[in-house]
Image (tube, rainbow, N blue to C red; front, side, top):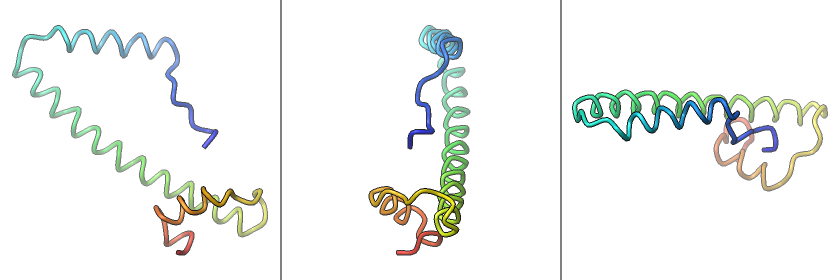
Length: 91
C-alpha cells in the first residue's frame, strides 16, 4: 500500500518524544495507571476505526475494479483483501 506513510513529520516526532519523556519521568503510579487506561481505551477505538476504514477502502477498490476504472489488482493484494473482507471481494 504505497499510499500509506509510516513516518511522522519532524514536528510531530519531536512532540511525541517530549511526551514520552514526560511519561518516563513520572513517579506518580496513580497518574500512570490513569494514563494507561486512557491510552488503552483510545487505542481500542483507533483500532476499530482503522479496521472500518480499511474495509471501506477495500470496498471502493472492488467497485473501481469491477467498473474497469482501476488498474487490475495484484493477486497477493486480492488474496489479502478477500481474507479481511469476504463480503466485498468474495471467497
